[in-house]
Amino acid sequence: MVQIDDKIISLDIFEKRFVCDLPHCLGSCCVEGESGAPLEDEETEILDEIFPAIRHLLSPEAVEIVEKNGTWEVDPDGDKVTPIIRGRECVYTYFDQEGVCRCAIEKAYNEGLVNFKKPISCHLYPIRVDKYENYEALNYHLWPVCNPARELGQKIGVPVFRFLKEPIIRKYGERFYEEMEDIFKYLENQKKQKTAGDEKNIKE
Image 1: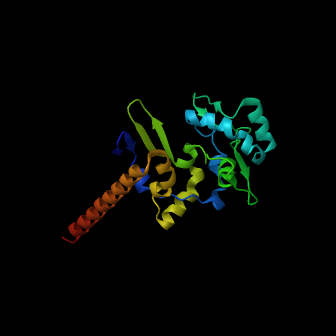
Image 2: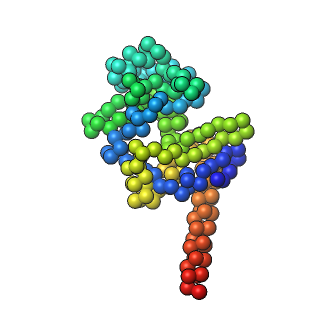
């Protein structure tokens, strides 16, 4: 683990590789799971505000659920989350012509209909943030549905934190991300020194 300010960060975020591969995973992270996407308190208000602007992008079933139960709900663990359809996909999704599950909020954002891109928990995935009294813990969430992303990330060599540069800056700012880059360079240098030392010992 490493620390920046009051954030404790898992080394996996620097050492693991990850790049979303939608043609192979088909957006399964928006479909699988026991509950919807975790929401910040202020995001529940935002969903209330933007629903009229994104309503036309949602399925009739999703609209019915939102109009009946609200734009967000509380799951069995007591967390505020997005509603889901029949225990499956988030209500704020749609399926494109290739069968990929995509975010309707992000589509509306890209079309200039709203100024909110998506819940930060979605944007930051596979980083999960756990909040404690005096600090936040940033962990790498390992989920089998994301195996294609791990394979692609490994193939092209993109660390988790670099893949998530935009959402990290969105949540924590430029300086925080730059410090993550410094930590990554330090860890890589330590790894190279260890490898060089091991090779030297073998030769001796």
